[in-house]
Image (tube, rainbow, N blue to C red; front, top):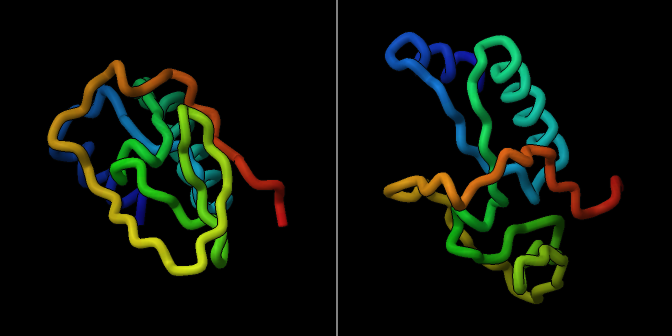
Length: 114
């Protein structure tokens, strides 16, 4: 689905930059996103800029697994357990500020592989 979506975008627009969340989250999703976008960067010369996922959900906890969530405190990402499920919605900001993103696009792997 991701390749066909980008094909549609490139058929209609000239894409020069991509802004994305580099984690934390699902290991597989982070890996697939990183590999796909790095391929675009190399093949098409598209600039990549990344931020953590908290930028896109108003700094709410992000589910890691079961009752464990990623939380961001003082620019440090750590895990925390919650008894109740935490709802957090991800959305695109109305405007993207370049200074909120970085050229450091390496995935955020917070938890060890299970």
